Length: 232
Image (tube, rainbow, N blue to C red):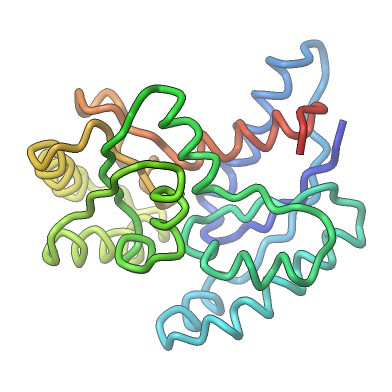
């Protein structure tokens, strides 16, 4: 079994989901008392969020690259960045290590294409929804990507940072997200990517008839697959 290097803490609430899903998948794959070999480095999210807010992606990339180097030195066989937004600096991190990064957008695109989805809505932080670093991975895979209008982008982003990253789950915010999802459906989305690792804490598949693709689940399950000798 390969050792997974998790870069977590962004936020810690969703990192706990990674740990649980990876181990559940390993148990399903291997049975018995098997569990995942994991090295976890949990960062201080306040520091990362500050760099996001001031646009200092170079600094945040340096910080996470240092973390990735430590995980590699400790014996990790590949890196999993437990957040969507910070994949913006994945190329910067990859330049500093020799082991591969399991990219969350590529894993998600593969899941969508396997299910025959062509046009997909994307929810996440304002950075994930509006910048190219994430969407381009989906588009390169052949997907058409829809995002909310400006009001929807603002509210989806606010709820992530002001509530979900603090573990604050509100019914009113769930209804806001469901309204945005409904708008994406009306615009032609065949499915919606929950492109922030906290969104799955708020919105579940049982809340809507539009297929939801939770990137936390997809990413964590793929990490477990890589760990049990699937090709890197």
